[in-house]
Image (cartoon, rainbow, N blue to C red):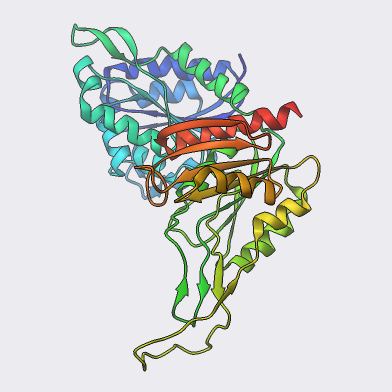
Length: 401
C-alpha cells in the first residue's frame, strides 16, 4: 500500500495516543512524509521524542520553541500538508475544533489547514454516544471534514463497546482508499460559479438576493477533493475556500461574472452554474448617492446577461454543464424548461418550499434531472454531504463518456 503524501499527524490527550507511534511507522512505510503536532496533554501519554524519532522530523507542541522566541507557524504547517489526521481525537479536541477554540497549536493548525482533515475519535463508550459528542462529530462533517469511525472493543475504563480509536492499519487503509477511489476527477478542470451578484443603483446601494454561497462553496470543495482543478467564480460572500486546488475569482455584478466565466470556459471539462445571478439590474447607475427627497422613487430595471444560456450556446461536445433551478412554484416544470432552453446536461432543482432547503441553511435537498429527464432525489442533509454525492454522480457521467 503506497500513500506517498505529506501527512500531518495530530495527537491529543488520550490513552490511545500510544497507537500514534504505530500509525506514524505505517505511514512512513507507505512512503508518506510525516510531521507531528501534539497537544500539551498528549505529551503525558507519549513523549515527543518517541514520535520525533519515528517521524524523522521535530515534533511541535507549543507555539514557541523551547521558550527561545522561535515561532512555530501553524499556517505554514497547514499549508505544507496534503492531509491532517488527528488520531487520537479526544472528546475535548473534537469539541474545540467544532467550536473553533484555538487554545493550542494543533487546533490553530486545524483552523488554518487548506487540506482534507480526518478525525479518528477515541473516548469511552458513554462519551462517544453522548449527544454532545455526536453533535460535534456531525458539525465537523458539515465543515467538510472526514470522520474515521471509532471501533468496538475493550476500552480503558474496563467497559466493552464503541469508542476505540480505529486501528492504525485501518486508518492507513482509509487514507489510501480516499486518494485512490475518491479522486475520479483527477486531471479534470471544473468551472464553478457561486454566491449572489450585486447590481449597483448608486455608489452606496445595490440590488441582490439572499444567497450565501454555501452550496456553491461546498461543491468547490467536493470537486477539489475528487481530484479536480477548480476555478471558482464567486460573487460577494463571507465564505473562504479551503482546498489548495481551488482558484477563486471574485466578482461583484452579473456582467463581471459573465466575463470571467466566458474567459475560463474553453479550459473547463465540467461547468456548474450554482451562483444566484440577479435577473435584473438598474437601467442606469447614478454616479452620486441618491438622496431621499421624495415620498416615492421609481427604479427602471433591465435584464442582466444570461450566463447559463451563454455557456449552453458555447459549450464544446466534451463539456458537461450543470445548472441550478431554485423555485417557489411549478418547480419541476420550470426546471425542465430551463434544462432544455439553456442546453444543459443536468439541472439541480431545489425549492424554497422545502423546510431546511435553500438560502442560508447548512442543509439542502435536491432533485437532479439529466437531459433525458431522468430524476435522482437527494434527501435533506448537509450541503457538504450533498455536494459530495452529486459530485460523484457527475464524475460517473464524465468519466464514462
